[in-house]
Image (cartoon, rainbow, N blue to C red; front, side):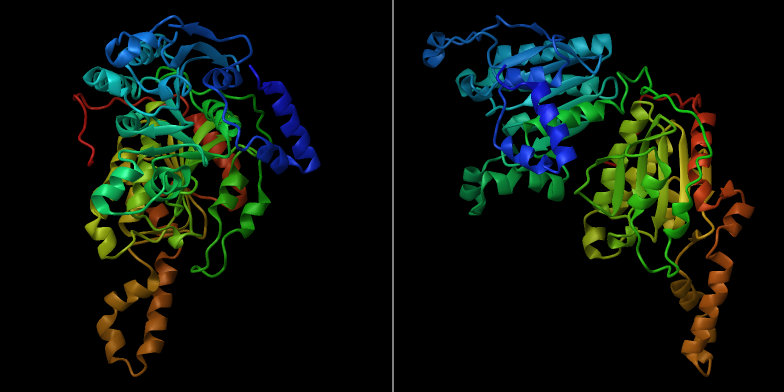
Length: 513
């Protein structure tokens, strides 16, 4: 191996201390590691056990019988990451461009089958030009065999795909069915049809990077969950991600040692602005609640009006779903609903408790949203949370209006505990809009309509711009001071750690796709 993992890690640590981290990143920015270098860097030293090393392709057409390479363009086997067993495959672009053949696919399928049998994560390092043309339908069949196993493994073991080079045509569907997809800037891309086909069919001039690069998929399509600066950062992200999730659906994430102290966070008291229409950064709330520096955000650059990611709370791995008032006032729309729903379903599948932080004024209005299916996509988040059986705890920080209040893990859809800050407003809509409807005649007939509207708006706000009505009905379990949030939530998740829910007897539900 030409890249020394320890040397690079030491350099990065030294650079962080000396302010030169960016310099080290740039030094390795354009360096693509080989398939074996990637495997060795990702896995604990000396832990890799390769399988299928001597496999070769079976094709004799087009002079292929004279081009024999052991391993047939993919490295597969077992290894450990921070002491945890994983199954892994890494496509080798130096052998036929990493193109997938019948035997190449068989090796991947075999290691995926092993992962399911022994109950460990499967990690795919993708770097392939697509199906091996010389094998025709046999390579296409190989893709289908992999797709089938992706589906069978879904919800059984975590599946992580790293796109570290080209990924085109049928090859893109396997990563799309895995739990998380990570792409590398400038050196990886994913698309069903390439720029040349696009040019021929639609007359659009576009580069591979613009069409399916990491930036396009992290901001526009949402296909990729995490974007890495280079190969090294990509592999480090895999390690970090694995630290929050369990080996399989039969286990829980590892809980780190933690001793409960006072846990008060006075800094949370000053986050909510006095003006209800003024935004604030929900990241400040998240960081004020969770264990220090433990937030690992997923889908950071996509649908940023909602935040999802993993954190630790009292040493326990917790999935966070939070509205972001800094973007579109935190409304729910098509993209944010899909983003949150998928994250919720992953957490539920792998026994990761959910913390939902709410500041939502409703669903985004407009023809664009309606015609693109906000009803259908909003229902996905509603379905995902209603279906989830892991511990689910909600904290309403400010607005919780309309149907979005119901969708964001309300008591009515099975949340275990619902807290609210004194600044919480739980109502059908904002005070002004509600007053214009309820008191329309009274305002219209008043000598000074504007003054009367302001009076009625204040009256409505005094009634609903606080969490007391909801608390009186039992929809809110407790109104808490912001500084007490961390302490309350740590104890709440500990209380529901062994929650047990029996689902209805059925084959499966029909989530609104």
